[in-house]
Image (tube, rainbow, N blue to C red; front, side, top):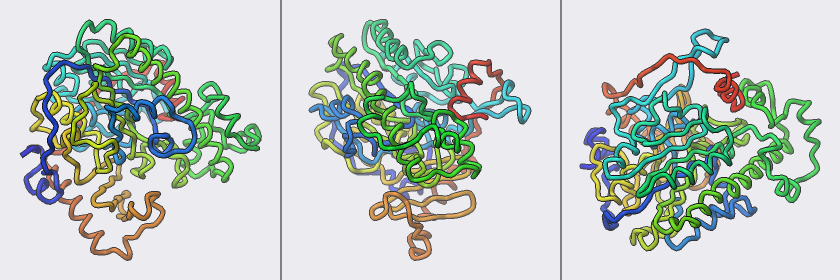
Length: 461
């Protein structure tokens, strides 16, 4: 049985055991590059049906003959640290335990903090690929992913935010790392991309001019609707600020404009660099995100606090090495998939075993029967088109087939379905009792630059 972490009853009840696929295990050498575009929503991408030119470079990658677009891909955590820990380890957050950011030792002083780290006992994606002969490098933006927090396990080279401040320079560092590899490589790059806030320097001015509308930004900023700073996140979360319809429209506009810049100047620069080096055909490129972003869809802003679809549903575009796209995969996969599936899928493609992981090898045609995601005191379970949301002490139910925007809680008129979904969740969570991991905690000092960056991104006040 594939999953030895969850009990056999979980495999039977939740459907982790799936029909076998038919992809070949090709041991021939190819490179692997994962590009994470922070806070990227699939509904803003041309390859997912968006009707504005926000992502021509990603759309071109998705249109490659060797590419596959996963339409229902989901992350397991609602913010960078937890989500990336799941991507790297192939484990649910309740298994790796990394579910919190930074906690100050004194309520109002953020210099001395405690924080959870990835336990050394977990074998990360980089460690497993190193065992298969890959030279590994990581280039990351987020302060949540620094070496000190355990995310550099298995990497031969790891460049964090303390070393490079600018995303464009970060893209160049990716290409320098590829040059330094001298052979088969696995690369992981994390760009800030469409993460809030949205100052003018982050926007594509031409896009804003083309799709703009009459809107007095200065006037609305004076009224509190200022998307150039992180203060609005806390104001909305605390109920001190509401957005008017034109504010929401403008928020979507500046979000999209930041995506245009990211697509062209970051992803485009990396893809062009691979082509210039003659490595595009021999490199497997995976483009995804660590989470989405609330654009006031449910009167919320940013991410980390909820498990709405705008936060846990993310893009996944996979361009396989030339001629090596698995034959059982269609151009567009409409089955469920999760971030925890990527590690077993890569290992399966490389002819290695992943029997200790809960995910399934989605590149071979196997499918996930459910998605489970967590956000602090909330979780979401998706199965058979239905979504159960446990929101602190309340259960809600949504029919994603008829209501993809989660606008109507149908629990009152679907009591049997609600009970069934609650039972699925209980089986999964009960299997973890006694096994639920508490991540190691370290005490550290946030230097002024780290404090500044975390405040800029709204993670601390």
